[in-house]
Length: 181
Image (cartoon, rainbow, N blue to C red; front, side, top):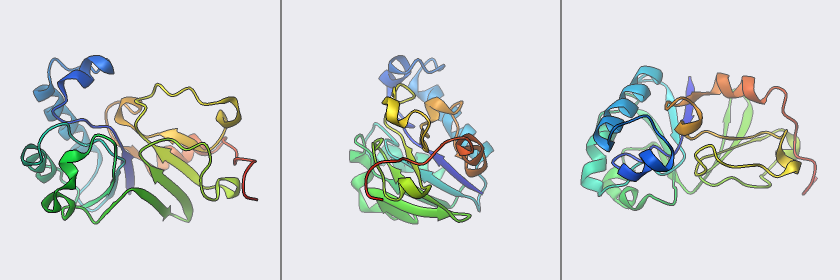
């Protein structure tokens, strides 16, 4: 099974109030988010994290990564990822990039930390998965029914979202109709 998430913000005390997260402090949030990941994603599954993993020095982030049961981790760089630039941490991922272009069960998926107004092959059915917005993005009218979604954990009950859940979400969405045709 393949899963997606973004904007975990481990150790980020202020994200609790900024995003109205239901945790008393960052330590409790860290424990709960790890629990949610490990209860949702299995060891042999694939987990794509679309940025903003931690808000702490690398030496604090690495132990969190070591506690994730899933061994098939992929990372798309976010804007709060200074801690992820360390080679030791990057080696913990199967892939580490700024932009992703993958296929799951034949479905082409574009991965980027930030939402894009237009993405490669969007007019041919590709999906645009992003984070960064914590569920607050108001899409422009031209994108309201299109195949774009925030996979940040603030949007999905503080846990990764599965490919099957996204497939269900996207079934009534349409392709973008502008751009390179």
